[in-house]
Every structure is written in structure tokens, then in C-alpha cells.
Length: 306
Image (cartoon, rainbow, N blue to C red; front, side, top):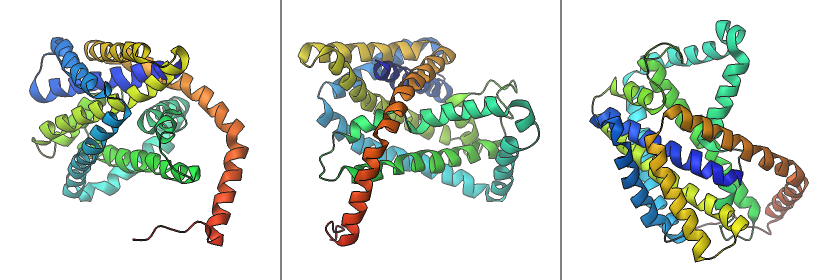
């Protein structure tokens, strides 16, 4: 049930909400038009998820590389253009986290907020990605686990660090209560725009692609949980897909605060049960890992060579 709620919140409403926010920022789309953005996104999402996992995989493998290349390319341009400020930016990030008022005034609060955003970013420990990895056909499950370890590294260590540098270099926001009114994707967009005005439109494209790919991926996670509870078949599956698309429209029309609070709560609840399961399965995973490493060293499992 918690996975279904997380799919409707973090994997759905939040994505639609931020996509509309980015369109409003880049193209001056009135916030009241959120229902139109939601209906368009819902129609696109439904056209993909109605085909099941093969359709979802086919679309995401085409969208994600271009989306990632576009975003990383823009971030690199900003960082290289302001290379002289990178050292100071890292210094400001470290200082804000570990010294002075950052520690004395709100270390625990900042830590909790950081953990929430990190979990939202890479879903480590949540259990959602495991649903997708479990669908992979492999004779060695450990290899899929090792591949999955790359996801948090690329997402949080690489992508989020680049984003933090872009925002810090721009200097548009000195804290959550600085009165600028910039939060979420609009803060990121404004920071990119400080280097080049066209980045506002390119980032809008990247955000919409990211939101779309995330929604269709999470629809699969939610569907697997839904059918586990209510049974498989065309009826239950269609009911969830229609419900999922309805929440796309809802997410694009309500306030950001309500969306992020609901999403955080759902992810937190999902994480509790998953982390308990991780500790219970830890001996099994450890045994499988040691067996895999031993077979690699013995030559029983050979590395793939072209």
C-alpha cells in the first residue's frame, strides 16, 4: 500500500507539479492552466503505460539518455564558465553544512531535510528500484545488485553535486527563508538562466522529459503493488492506470507544499518496511555475494569480452 501511495505522490503528483511549474516559469503559462498541463501529461502517460512494461522500457530507454545528456551538458557549461567560483562554491556548501550557524542553529533539521531530498533523488533504501531490477532476466542476481549501486552514485554524487554548484554559483538563494520565493525547480531554472537565457527553455524540456519518464516508471512500481493486493487481470490493472492518470491532473493543479509533504510521507512509510526487509535478508545477500566473488576468482564466471 505504501508503494502505491508513493507512486501516486513522489512518482506522479510531484512530477506533474514541477513540470507545470517549469512551464509557467519558462513560457509564462498561467498557474491556473495546471489542469491543461495535467490532462496533456495524463494522456501521454496513459498512451505508454497501457502497453505494459515493454512499452515503458521502450520509451524510457529512448528518453533518459537524451534528457541526462541535455541536463549534464548545461550544468557543465555553467560550471566551466564560472570555473573560478567552483572552489568558493564548494567552500560555501561545506561551511553551511558543518560550521557556524549551520551546526549550531539547525544541524538535525538540515540533516533530516537532506535525507528527505536525497531519498527523493535516488530512492536508495525505498525499495522502488528493486521492482524494476527484479524484472531483469539474469542467472546471477548479484550482478543486478552491483549495477543498481551505480544509480545513487550517478544521481546524487554526480548530478546533484553539479546542481548544487550551479545554484551556489548563481547566488540567488541564501536559504529557505530568504524571501526570494524561489524553490524547487524554479530556483534551479533561475540559477541556470544566470549564465544563459536560453537555458530556461532547454531546462523546461529536460524537466518535462524527466517528469514524463519518472511517471511511467513509477506507474509500473505502483501497478505491481496494486495487482499484488487486488489481483491481476485487465480490470484491476486498468483501474490503477486510470487512477494513476487522474493523480497526474491533481498533481499539476494543487500547491507544491501539499504535494511534497504527501510524497515525503509516502516515501518514508515505504522505506520503513523496506529497510526492515533489508536487514532480515542481509545474511542471504552476504552469502550470495561471497559465492559470486569466489566463483569469479576461480574462473567459473568469466568476464564478458567482445
